[in-house]
Image 1 (spheres, rainbow, N blue to C red):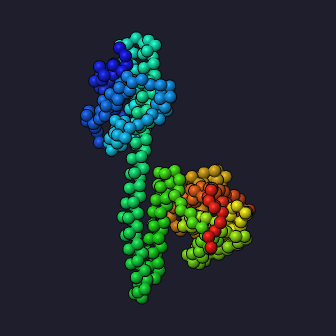
Image 2 (image 1 turned 90 degrees about the vertical axis):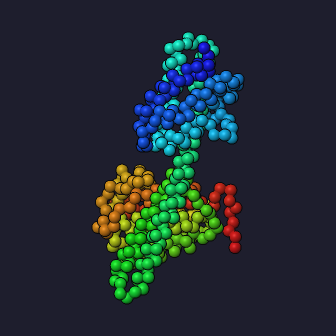
Length: 381
């Protein structure tokens, strides 16, 4: 019996194997009925059987083995299966495991009932290729749906948390103008709200970068020096007991996402102040070359341990070194700041490096091409 015919004749036996295995797959959702476990498995089998009956040339066979077969406009059963499994709480690894079990079940039952000849071996190969195509369709659909869920989460987070935080800050500012409210208390409320908002921004940036694989930026022509100077002044104002020095050499005209550049320097300065020696200055140095500009942030203080240097830009990672007494006054962050810095620099096709020693202190250095690849190297007046 040809495998294509076998899949149709023995569909119920194969699907019972599918049901039994699917019931053992751990997932985060509620226990599923037999109908829910099976969902579109029967349609997937039917599509594979029909595919085996169609003529196929070498190019089509190769494309299918890589999960790159041509698809029609309608959603395939494999894509629908991905939707149902995602809603039911299955992760992507569990869903792929189901396909592996389906493949094994079909080949085991077929081997028990049929003798493999040359035609059957060819059909077995095509069956494996069809399973690979179904896996590719399911994974692609699952990934797209996950990204949509992530984008929705970002929107909800931005709307439902930022708005009440804005109200808290505005109310605190009104209280600050009242002589009846202690200013220290009001400033504490404002600082805490600003800190929470900063953590939210980090989570949003991290989620977007993870979902799309790259930090979104919008380049505009401008002078990077002006943007970074604002951040230096703002940082100094927020930390009146610390000294922040700025040294500049060269010109800094180019094309950048100014908001992201400000975020980048703000994060690096925040780290330098947090971990640096409070008795010594934090230094921002800017210089330029023909095709690129660069700036560094330096602080004196305990060196970053060698083991931490290799992972310091990874998300959710914080160093194990000794914090300063000043740093211990503030709760630790999420471990996303330097990761976000790296992603901002990467999005601008630049580089971010760090050097650290007890003698010389710690220096983060950013190098950025003045323009994106293919962008006109001129600045509009």
